[in-house]
Amino acid sequence: MTSKQKKFLVWLLEGTKTTKHGTEQHTRSSWWNVMCLTGVDYFSTLGYQPGIAYLAAGLLSPIATLILVLLTLFGALPVYMRVSNESFHGQGSIAMLESLLPGWKGKTLVLVLLGFAATSFIITITLSAADATAHIVENPWWPDYLQNRITITLVLLSILGGVFMLGFREAIGVAVILVVVYLTLNVFVLWTGFEQLLKLPNAFANWWGTLLTKFSTPWLMIAISMGMFPKLALGLSGFETGVSVIPLVKGSPDDTPESPLGQIKNTKKLLISAAVLMSFFLIASSIVTTLLIPAAEFAETGKANGRALAFIAHEYLGNGFGTAYDISTICILWFAGASAIVGLLNLVPRYLPGYGMAPDWARATRPLVLFIMAVSFIVTWVFNADVDAQAG
Image (cartoon, rainbow, N blue to C red; front, top):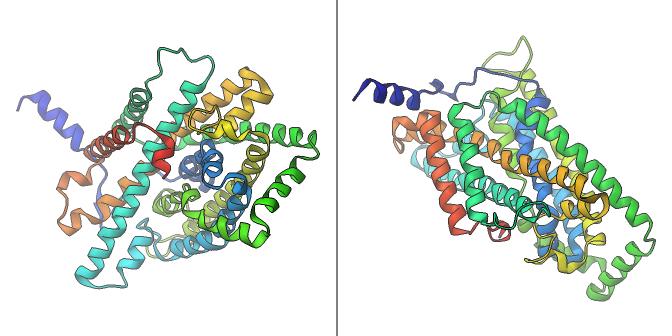
């Protein structure tokens, strides 16, 4: 090889050191900063969750979302609080299950669970980028001749991959800015939405009356809504990401590698804060979008498809504010894939090379990023960058 080829190969295979606990992380930040990094995945689902919820549940969307929130707060959250106690090196829930089964039984279980985790993370990357594209092309100021969704989505994925090829230590700083701006704009949109509902005093009564006419009893509504849970639980991968980035969380001065109690405590603050914040936004957004947006706008050709809150922003706050909201949504949806990539970069080097099922270069960040991006490109192409298809 020439000297340039050697330099390129050294750069490509350059990565963090790998220990028995996985990939070392040299930069630690406050728990709320790390929450923003994992939260770009969780919070960004506001960009498409209300629309998907309506397509799945119709007028039952607020009830189905409430059930999702209850299962999040009283099911997923307590489980992952326990995971943070037991798996504080960032191996996630998979390591806990691996320890229950010895030998190849445990390894086989890990491989199956890694398949589920990888699928969840890849779909997070591609679905979020596809929804960012939907917000771009649906904006009234976007030129008509730039409407190819697959091309735009692939460009967004390429930029995201390029960030990680350069390095992801600055990712937390970017995430903090995006999350703060995005959630602030969502507060304005939801506040405006509820103001509009107050001007329509019969909106809630009409909605509830329609539900009773169609489903007869609240118990039937709850039963049907519970069946919608799998279609709505798109943001729950954020919990697994949250525990996989525990090594990034700053702990107490007296923490030890064997007992990082301060780090565990701060990780629990991260998980609780993310769950409570997201629960509030999910319930509020489902009520506003279901009661204010005509059903036809949620359809595939409708203006609210994949962008229900953006529709509210444009409709009631004008195209200027709506475009600012679109830009913020596009940025956080584009960057939502960052938390999924971080999750994959933490999980894969911890298991597959040690099992002899991946080459040594899988321990390095950049080759693994290229592989993740290649899979994401294929998934985007197969699903035609369609948000609803990937949600299903």
